[in-house]
Length: 265
Image 1: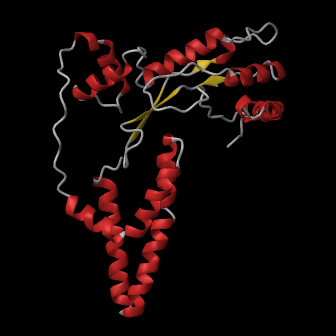
Image 2 (image 1 turned 90 degrees about the horizontal axis):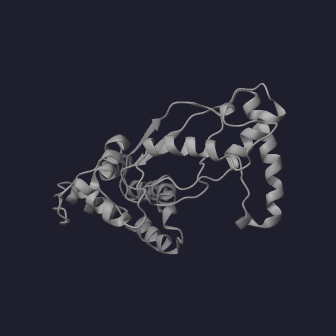
């Protein structure tokens, strides 16, 4: 994890980026990799935003310091079936490597990095769903879902977008699917009432909706296990070790089934 300082973090912090860039130069010089989210922003839309120039500047600086170094860029597309629901699935698609040296001339560089940014952006738009039409974005997404789009398959999803105007899918609501595990979900919720109430309060304080799953995951691996252990200790106190272990095992089974079968928005 390497920090990057932005103008929004304070104009004076920008100077710290030079030290970060120097660190990246050495990482690349040692034939190691750096993962960078080139958009420099987080969002919920299924599209590739215009890139920031940070990664290109790192490449330029590295080649100016080590001109004989070969730097490859590996585009990776992340595809989520749902951004906010839990649980959700993700697929990763790796694109063909791009030789950065072909796009950057260390002695007389194009500081806009137009060709390089376009090349990488074009590659990523094939590896994840990219809806270019911002004006009709919501309408396109709704139509894709009616058509049964598989968000985990960017090639199929992008093909649907490409032919979206030719489709005649009616914009009707989806039929609700019966979840036969609902009784188990109810039992799991009753057994977790205290941490769920705490989550309900914390959820209302989260200003950036994108971080919902981050907080949710943190609570799942901390608060919930601690609460179950406390309840297990109470069962042990009033009964015996056998019943305490049975209760703890039941908590694990209920949690596993709920995690795999319950959709939480």
